[in-house]
Image (tube, rainbow, N blue to C red):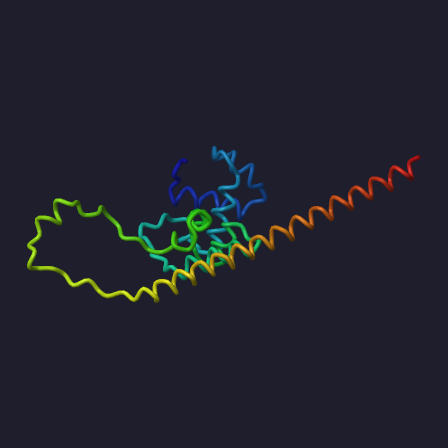
Length: 192
C-alpha cells in the first residue's frame, strides 16, 4: 500500500471538495487505484481538519473500557468501521477492525493491556541473589473469579445482541424475498 504525503492528500481532497468532478475521475487523474481512499480522506478531513490527513506519530493508549465500548458499538449497530471511527473520534478505522477481530477470537481479554517485551530467561532468574526475594502481592482468588465471570457475562451479552441483530436481518431478507416472489407471481398472472 502506497503511503501518500500530507500535501498530496490535502491537494486532492480540496480539489474534490471545490470542484464538480467526481471522486472517480479525480482518483484516476492522480493515479490512485481506488476512489474509496479519497472518500475516506475526505471524511477524515471533514471530521478532524488537517489532523485527519496527517499520519500520527504519537501512539494514543486506549483503556480496556474504551476499546470494549467501541467494539460493543460496532457489534450492536450498523455502522461501518469508518463511520464509527469518525463518531468516536478515532482517526484509524483499521484499529477498530483489529479490536473487533481480536474480540471475536479471544473475547474481552484480548482487549486488555499486555506487558511488552521479552520474558526473562531462566538463567537470569537463577543469577539473582536469593536473599533479595520480592514479596508477591496477595491476590484474592474470589476477586479474580468474579472478574472472569463478569468478562464472560459481557462477552455473552455482546454475542447475544449480535446474534439477535443477525436474526433480524435474516428475517428481513426472507420477507423481502417472499415479497419479490409474490410480486413476480402476480405479474405472471396478469401477463397470461
